[in-house]
Length: 221
Image (tube, rainbow, N blue to C red; front, side, top):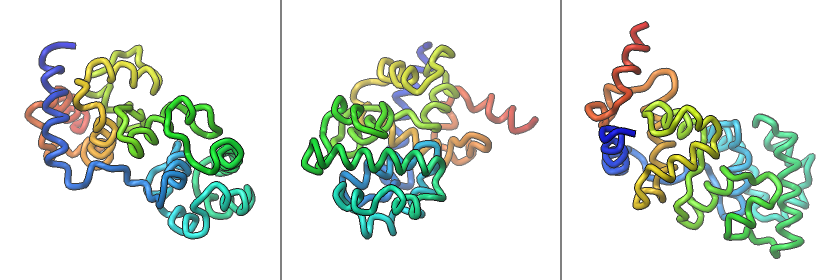
């Protein structure tokens, strides 16, 4: 990584939090810690917008592991069937609820090691939960983070999995920014630096971005 790229990292996490037209927080709808975990599980390979279409009605009647168990797997499927992989997600959410009731008195644990041992919660999901609910300096590498970390040249070609991208980002991004990395990169990637049609013309980083010339050349083709 050269000096220009290192400087861009600092500029990126300094400027964007002050210029993004939305709060630095998850856009997933939830009413408490448990429902947030459920929403994150549902969001895997699905958009937050699609998840938010179903969760408000679901969380009106289910806001705890006990109520989720009462609803049951088939009952849950009726609410989430428009979400990708809803069958497997319903199975995992019911299994998660059972473990929380049996082992944690119905409360979502507050450490990453405990979270990743639960059904339906992998490394990315645990990182998002820890970051949003506890302010932990973790990075949940979703589509936007993965794409733009490569687009800006922040990670190597060998970083071909979310876990590898996370490991490299945590090494090259200054620790003072770790708590906001996920929120900033997701929101910027979702609304401005998108996959197919990046809005470089309205991006406050256009004069600093090392990828802008490549992006604009691709648009012309």
